[in-house]
Image (cartoon, rainbow, N blue to C red; front, top):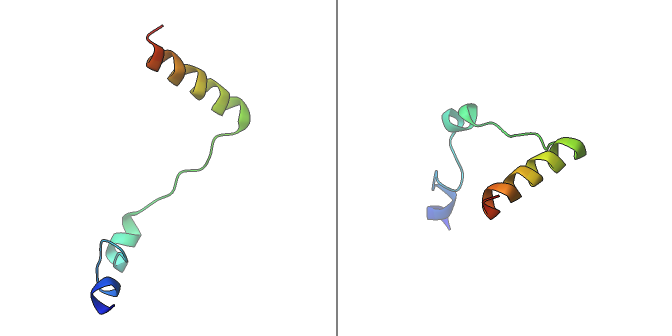
Length: 45
């Protein structure tokens, strides 16, 4: 159990946490555009 708790890949240290960020979800209108564009990329049209 100690090897898991001390593993920084699972529980990052404070220095790593300071460099992390989260992204905010898109609103519905922007998400619709992103989905349509990604579908076009995947389908090749």
